[in-house]
Amino acid sequence: MPAADQALRVTWLGLRGLPGVQGGVETHAEQLCPRLQALGCELTVLARAPYQAVLPASRWQGVRLRRLWAPRHKHLEAVAHTFLGVLHAGLVQRPDVLHLQAIGPALWTPLARLLGLRVVVTHHGADYERQKWGPLARWVLKLGEASAARWAHELVVISHAIQRDVQARHQRQGCWIPNGLTLPSAPADPSVLADFDLKPKRYVLLVSRLVPEKRHLDLIQAFANAQAQGRLQGWRLALVGAADHADAYATQVTDAAARTPGVVMTGFQTGTALQALLAHAGLFVLPSSHEGLPIALLEALSWGLPCLASDIPPHRELGLPEDSIFPLGDVAALSASLTNLADRVEHHEGPADRLERMQQAARRFDWDDSARQTRAVYERVVGLGNNSGTLLHHEISPPS
Image (cartoon, rainbow, N blue to C red; front, side, top):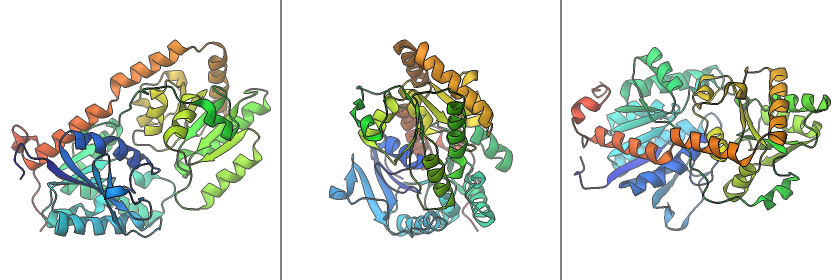
């Protein structure tokens, strides 16, 4: 156990890499890890070698980056890499806390406990509900969730919806620490829009990986229907993101976009280009069937964008107005919502409306607050918090 005045040595495992790597868990880590480093944690990220760039001194914003081998395979990379990472943490590093990200990597929580590690797991969503997984993968993911609930010293959940599900399935009270947002500190340069033939405030935006649960095809069809009815004239639809692995769904989306006038696929974007695409969009849409607490939607709100989102519990938690929610999978309703909101943006929206949305979101979701809460979880796990013996959700004996 570290002394109260010593840095907590924390290893993160379960993400692809940092910075600028596509994915919600990766963006979550990109925001939290430097903040935890600033709060006195000594952070190490065990990253997957195919995704992690080699950086000078193997550090980024003070966070140590350690590349470990991982197969570039949709079904094996997370499981294999996490297994190696747990062995590395348990036999070589011996951190004060091992922080596993997502329920797939959490499959190895019992192994980490056998190696004598203090383990925190963050549950980012019920990944076994994602359409891309087959029966075996879903069973493994459910086992990972059960392992986290049974063996983690602390289980962090990013939304109340996940918290309720875990309580119902596993009788475990997860510690709620939501994703956050950061308000922009400066305007974004619109010149990047010309690279994609986009005009400020005249395009609909979706930022996500090309995976089935994001339901790109619903949005493309809704956009096409609106244009066929003479609506959204002069507007374009920008799809930002790429597939991690080439598959049939990514091909379907690419083909549908090519057939639909006005649809632009930008590929994966990060940094200033992504900020410009967010800052100057007319509206943001997330038609997903599955989310944890969507960082892409939070980032859109940080720029004050009018948003549309499917009617699923995590989207409800963001406090969107009722007319910004449409029934999941209802293309006709989505098309009508698109045209109504675009009309409002063109004729009734002003800077004050965007500023109000930014301020409302910032009051509820704050990465700095999330980092402080995460640091407090680490302190409880290693016994530095007040009354630490009673603050753990429940005591767990080592596996027999």
